[in-house]
Length: 172
Length: 326
Image 1 (cartoon, chains in turn brown, blue):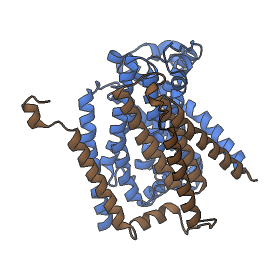
Image 2 (image 1 turned 60 degrees about the vertical axis):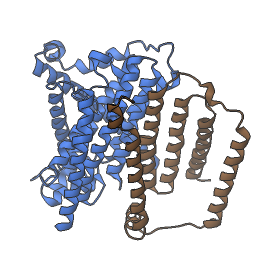
Image 3 (image 1 turned 180 degrees about the vertical axis):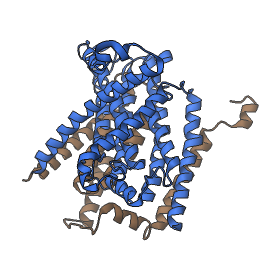
Image 4 (image 1 turned 120 degrees about the vertical axis):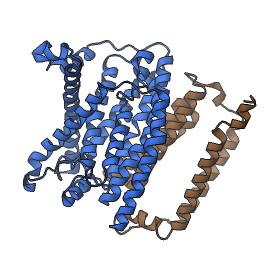
């Protein structure tokens, strides 16, 4: 076994352990921090697969923005220090196990069916290739996704802003 | 040389350089403030004030670490580590010359933006885990500010990337050499100003020090920290100052290059040129810090969302149009 293999297995173990800790810990902030570890190890695995762009997007968007907003939200609403009993939910354990196992099964099946052990080697640098494909072959879905995001943005603003008409009537 | 030994040497060099640069900038800051505000201490005491940064560091080393009773201990203890790791990690892409760089990443600029966003987690967890109202308020203000100013920081760099057609930091400098002018003159002047303002806000330096605001929040998210952990926050502030100014010099001011000097000697004068440019920019930020009053929270958010972000979007549009036209 080469060094890189040992390193990969170590990362996978770390990924698994931190993933389990995300769902088992009863402290919201600890869960968020373990999620950072999970995402960071995923990013390192992507770098090992020479997909630097995906790895950096993972760090920028998920660790830098989503987790930060998550922490921000938890702090603004209620920030209990220490474990929170409400987070332990014993009733749904069976369903949760079943659902996660089936998702795991479906993904494994699809990935094995599609790729099995074929090695995909792309010409040129991966980021340049990704950019060219996004703006040529997949330009329509790419633009469509940005419209969906724009819609979500406008929806978010509409829900969050103060309604001036209601404000005048002292209803808020 | 094998990969692992090369990596070890690079890591050791970065770990040695970062604190030295932080010490240099601390000296520049105390000397600058003393010079601007007539403070006798840093100008005359102890070898004309030159051992001042060392004395500060020694003071924090010998102080006792106090951990309050109600804090969330692991989160509280590790919060400074997030901040300093993110800041030191950025040394990877600072080019001292075309070859004197830890790694000339193809996605250099993107790496900068991704890694620098990690330190927000450190600030937020520090504010939350301290179990202190001042800390929590400081953490919340810091988070709001860092989220708001990350956008103009990212967007102002996009103009440079469009003009240089590359995200590699060495590539951007080479493009400026090829062009004959640094990007700050050749079309990205507004982007440079936006970058410097956003970087100042990201560093939480005055006039953007609302999250620390000692007159109302004691020390913001750092209130409960003492001894070596406070020193880590303190030193990472100055390492961040160095990194941000070095990257601004690289992206906008021509980096290690200076006109008229022979390019084959760049490995000798390159580091000196870049550090010179960096310290000049840092002095500018220090002068701003000791001249301007603090922004109010709403003014600070208005500046980011209503002025800087539209301006940087406009800059991207104009740069893209110019790129297509010429």
